[in-house]
Image 1: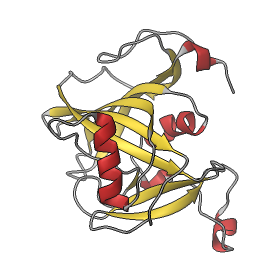
Image 2 (image 1 turned 90 degrees about the vertical axis):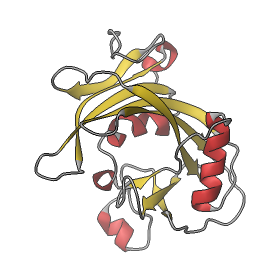
Image 3 (image 1 turned 180 degrees about the horizontal axis):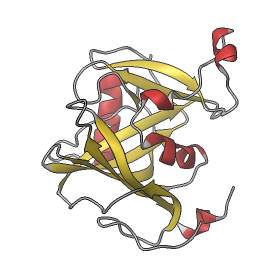
Image 4 (image 1 turned 60 degrees about the vertical axis):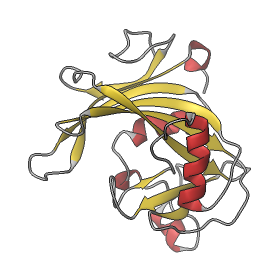
Length: 209
């Protein structure tokens, strides 16, 4: 990992953890605030994701979240969205920030605050918007183990394409800040592909394993 200049829109003392893609960064847009929350079991070996059943990101697995309403803090919105989408309450802790820009998409950029918790209360419930499902956080999980009754591995192939670049940081307990630019796929209107990304961590976490 090495220090580098930050992408436009990011601030702080950060060391590059993961970066890639091509071209120039997209022009900054007015930001709207969103949240995304991830719930783990106490051992950290299971993570709860939800399959989006309708709306933006339909058919993809993600954490639980959405827009920050007027008068709410991101932390308050994260707890509300988790309750609305999965039926549970959790003592969420902030773990990352993501600037998410869709070129040729919405006129705004998504400023997403990410949260996590290793405990929750209530009964996990499928809702109109999300179908919750547990996944193993172990990178060694195979399809055979899943078929034999174990939990499936994190479904990166059925998630937003930037997730595979920052989620390992979250799983390792490293706070992070990042940016991901997506461009619309001309062959599939409404579908977006990642074009450029950058994720960094505070210097204290840069050399930790």
